[in-house]
Length: 248
Image (cartoon, rainbow, N blue to C red; front, side, top):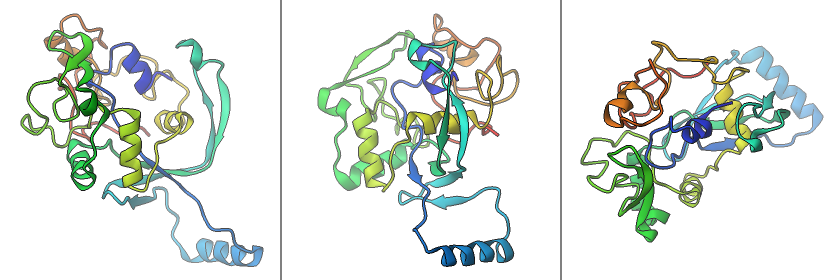
């Protein structure tokens, strides 16, 4: 599946850095005796309404959705070599953040822990320059991913935090009593039961507002950037979380 990582590889995901795309908690239950287990199952079947969507609130105040257990075909035959072979994967249920972690939430984490990100320690971060080139930008970090004005000065409090490393994402998760999803869990949730190249199909998005990718809006600022022609999400770079239609 050409999800986040494939879009990034093809230059179609224009966020200037890595996004904490999802945070999860394993859905689990205590082991019980068979008798107790049957009592609970009967109570659930007879007294509880059926739920198609289960939602909880994480320690960091974000909504988390229960992704049901299931099987899916992971990988792709049209992408990179490390995406092959396509193979079946079985997963237990788990909780996944409904939205990406925002700059506002990450700021709360930093303030409470005095955490310093990898980019802040190294004094640089990779990002898309005003000329549309992906390169290392001196002084860039999650607060100022382009190296200039901060995300708060440019009214991006509710945009996904970017320019964070795996170590930064892991630190946030530990603070929030969560963990990062595995590659299989992320692809399973992104596919949402589909078998197409993208969860919305095999081709262009058309008029459906589905994803924040490099598109006609980005092309107006980054003239040489490869884009998905004909699609316009309305944002040259990132967009506020929850701006687009969810997958099925």
